[in-house]
Length: 587
Image (tube, rainbow, N blue to C red):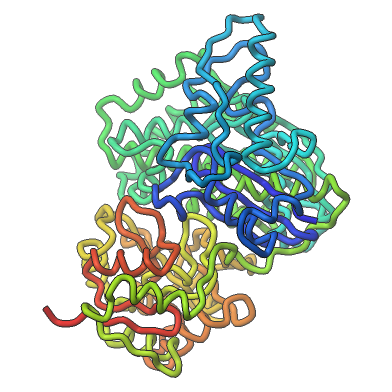
């Protein structure tokens, strides 16, 4: 049976669970090339349905058992709870012209008149129901199914269930925490989840008490982009003056804190929360503000988790929701004495809510959810398709193109000579973090490569670190990991060893020497493991610097033409494109 999960909000994505196994998960941005693309994921849906059907024309729609959507109390941001004003209409939010293909089949572009509206408190009804009916009709047409097979799943439940394919603790039951900005009028939940998928919700937190929104507010006050650049605040935080940031961190508790019973308590009127944040931030140094909000987040989440682990006696935890994209906070959870094991949903923001929604569909059908084999859940391209892309882009006029017997050996040799290589191979990985198949790789011993990558390709802020991909069997040499957890998806931070500071300096945070590593196993990623092993043979270093293959402001590359276009427009000299190696000709 095929169950589809759809997140049609921020970073719109589609997932598929087939016979209990997560088989596909893709974000719309990879297709329409609009970074963090929101709205209904038309192109991603079309690809997933075609994959399920084994042919073109959206044939997979007839094989879909359920379509599960990532919100329950809103349908296309139309509130189902009485009063509500949402500044996105269903039509405008789900069908922006830049986000919708226009095939002849009209089901891809249903003409439904849905407009923004404002309801007074207590007003309902016919207006509301009419729009909900139209929204469901829209979703049924968009997904090629009928309204009876549509399921609106609570946002926080989607996040909680997104952990299920990735659970790897030693016990049957996990304590699941979700934490994000908001969704379905909530911002957090605590639940108990069994390996069989039984979910018991213990506590829900209203959206007003959102530490995620406080962190995002600070992100905006620092001149960065809210809901996107929070990771930059995390990257800046280690540079802060410790005493000053600690004091300001404690001051944030006057706005929101966690009590001794594990509740998030808002200490100001809901409408005054943002102003209270602004008042605390006024006249603060940028680094102190970044360090304070990061320390505040770490302390509050740690207390929250500690209280609930003690209350339930369950030491294996799982976490999802956009706040858990913060790997430094995750590192503190990993290090807690109360926590025996930790699982973080890969790319834990709203994009992975699509996974939880699909999981919900499968569980509702009585299916068992199987462990996820990997996160390589997107498109792949065969050699003929790559040849076509090379021909259409006239790449041979600009690049020397070779086809080595062993591309992994060839890439490792180039890396060992100090050059960076864009690596494009296999199925695209899902999520915000490249895992080798759509990555730029470099020698992690050379700190000078950081400046080259920033100036020639990434245009990253100077304080932001890169990340290492490390052979699993070498992880203990480089990382302090007393719990023995694995981190195949770059969702945990670790403190580094002295050897790591010698072997991997370009892939560590330059100030506190923490790392956001990808563990690369022979079974899970054989090609990437072989590449790093070849690099180790040449250098003695069991890891490489890994950063996503994209230009600043663009999504990670997805198709061969994206890879060639990106190479054309940046300072990289080498691209591995499947079996081929492209090298820029001298000007």
